[in-house]
Length: 104
Image (cartoon, rainbow, N blue to C red):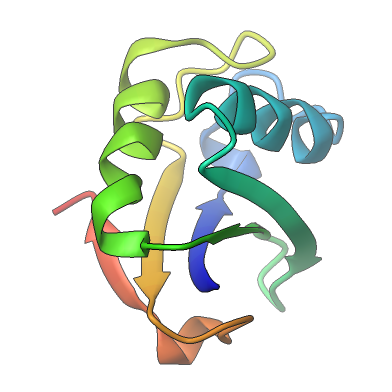
């Protein structure tokens, strides 16, 4: 499995509800027909949240994740301003092992 990480900045969210850690990965799994699945979540020292996702091909499937974030509100949040998306070919990669792909 490969890794997709979504870093969320609560200061840029209109509704920084912690339930997003459940709702966003669930919606992504549904949107991608199970190609991208929830793995874990964590907090960075600066209080941003990282939602970790597993997929067979991060480069191929990250486009669907970006499309979802760009087109849907999640818990009344427009995540285009609040999210950064990272990918790695490594399984359960740390953020410093990932490449930022969104925003470009």
